[in-house]
Length: 373
Image (cartoon, rainbow, N blue to C red; front, side, top):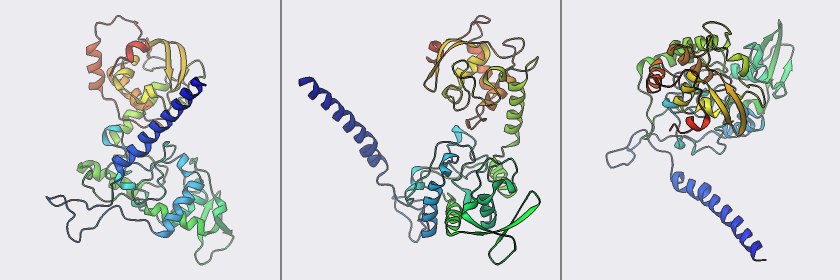
């Protein structure tokens, strides 16, 4: 009986601690956030007649947020522009600045999401897509971009064979159809158009990079598809080179594709995945070291244990240059839904200089690498 009491007390204490941490703690940290002006007076007050942000969505946009959730859009799209050091969201034209907690205080439905199969939508309302374009994309994404994997939602539209007032022309496979949006489709488009973090906040200003801003503006105008993830030319070139190294089995290649597969999913129980891998997206020094000397023994990836050996990539083994290592690692950190900062040749060279006395083919163990902070 005494043990049951202790057991019940332990459960209650665990739940109470979790409630304090996740509910009370969050309230203490973010509970007093409210709309504010882009800048404050010296005394911290909001200037007279200044606009405050974020502003509340219109009624139809709030209804559209619920449609967004019901259609499962959060499965493939995030709504959070990440910090500059964490990825390339600003360079991709997905926003003028990283998102902060205050951006969401006026939203009844906060759809930050956690997986990027498609692009981030935190600022899709700034990308100058027309309502007609968005409706067509909802109806049949493949009519705009043939390789799009976004599922169509024809049930949101009334399809006609002839044109008419308010109808949108959709051409696919040489067949022209005319669609009339339902109220659900109009709600969803209103919500998407309302998604824009086009203001500065005291805690987060626009990223001050004239070249990046100019590129981003060009991308906003030129992107033909909401699923596009165009990159700065230097990054696109590095990723393209890395993909070639990853896929090539022979001199000059890494041969990575043999074990980790074209999908980056590896082979269950044998070779660990690179897609959404904490080892790939985490500490840079750790993965650079693996690319130089390989890895052996037990390793845990995303909660699953593997036990084997990975020889240093390259043919001959361990022959990849600093540039090749930087390119292939940048590729795998930005492929298969991964999105992380690039790796430079200087970073690779710095790591190589710290382990230059390590023996050839002296593969790392997870215990050694996990000591890297």
